Image (cartoon, rainbow, N blue to C red; front, side):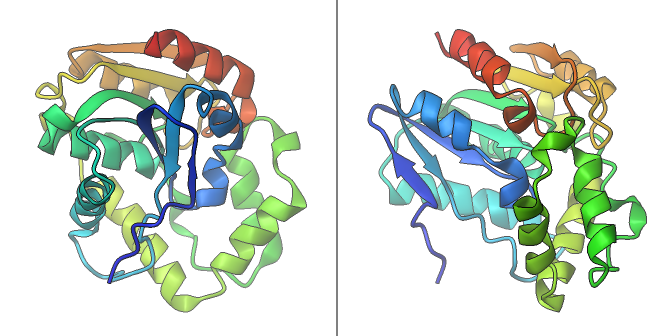
Length: 243
């Protein structure tokens, strides 16, 4: 049975869901939670990433999980922020359930193009290799703490977890959502790092071109995880968008 108990549930007001990417710790929402729990009920769902790694329907499974999560908590409508894979899931949910979403905020979302792992991810026993892969996600290297690398390294020591992550990354790369974007009329803010090498800035412009009610903001000195690398600017732009 799936667990609908969120990792974080704090604040009061309009519900806001924060969806992490392949590694929750690479999508650390702590500064976002601090900022928006003063005006919203902020929840971070436990995305079931480590199940059925060989399924080609994993993105649909995760989207269905979010649909069930929203129903489980009795929300009629939510605002969703998503980073990387989390953005991909947010878009699919908004496409399938347009009346249930107030607004979307996407940061480094997959769905059009994603350069994950460079095809060499399975060498999980090599700590330095994992450290290099984590570091390549960020432009601001001071964000890459030992604790962050350790958490990723510990996660991928499980063969089943590793297979699931690889399966999800490949599913995201295969599942191009471009054809559905013109049907998503949810107001959407795209916040992208100019130095994002996983989903380069051109990807944000392509999302912007296809999403009818979208705006785009680029943050300099910022890679794939803008809410960690430029938290003050990130929160400022989101706050303005929500207003």
